[in-house]
Length: 280
Image (cartoon, rainbow, N blue to C red; front, side, top):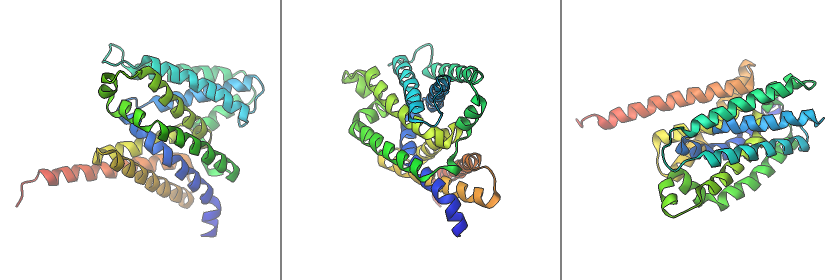
């Protein structure tokens, strides 16, 4: 037991911090139908970090994070500018995909020109959640507290634009401005989480709990509760399984979330059949 705590306590605490804010933001992602925006913003952050390597900036330094934030600001501006009030000929998901591919290609090209660039790309993709340190966890928690206050202060605006965009349009809100503020905060969350968890795990933290929540609820508080609970269960089982099997932690957590979602889907279908069955 002591060995388990020594190895897994830090990753567990880090995962719980990540789940707290990602599972909530995932609800916005699903409601907005921009499923892959987090991948695109994560790749923009990776591009910024990789660009810093060209200037001799260490990948884990505060300066590298500034490069990542600058790239995320550009991404947030693009996504805010390309959201249409009405269904256009080009869906925003296409723009998101293009940004993701271009940022990925640019990061690879830059990494090819700097020492240990390939290793940096690999760490960005895989993350280092198993080896996270307490100082890193404290910095992550502090950053997320600030970002949580930001999202809480603007919660009503963000939730209206995500869940009731027609209402926001009817009230004459400057949609692109509020979209930019949302994507800016969202991108900052991604910037802090990707170096720890990696791109696939961050995507999983965002999307899987939110999808599970939308299977069973529509009310905001219920959505948040189910999303958080899904994140806690998936992360705990994934970390414990990684310790027992000695398999890579990040990929195993991702697969565990997939299994949790599959079980939730089965439960949802059974519940629907039971509700539709005629009373005896």
